[in-house]
Length: 100
Image 1 (cartoon, one colour):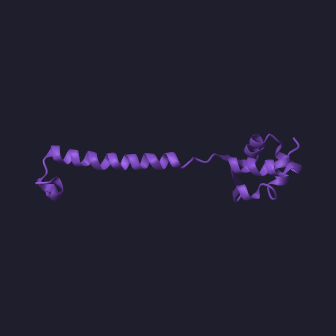
Image 2 (cartoon, helix red, strand yellow):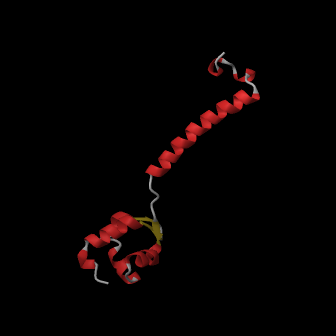
Image 3 (cartoon, rainbow, N blue to C red):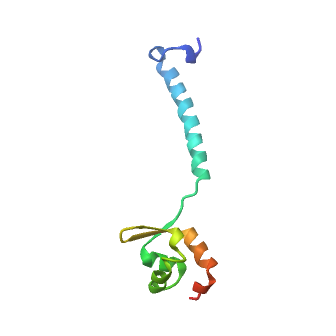
């Protein structure tokens, strides 16, 4: 009798463990593949964090956050969170603000 045809309550401990290992090993490999393909984004927090990332002053960040950097920023009340990679890309594209 095949394990797939056997009711769960009739499985021995050894059979149950082998079935569980098969299920969890295939699920774990799928999860590992997903983790490898998705990159973790780095975020910076606040005006001082953005200034440190870009290598400029806080006042400069305050001036350009509503124009040049706006697409990369998320604001919630007084909190500012920015995608680090996207902030650098936007900052480097706008050469007029690139003077340090």
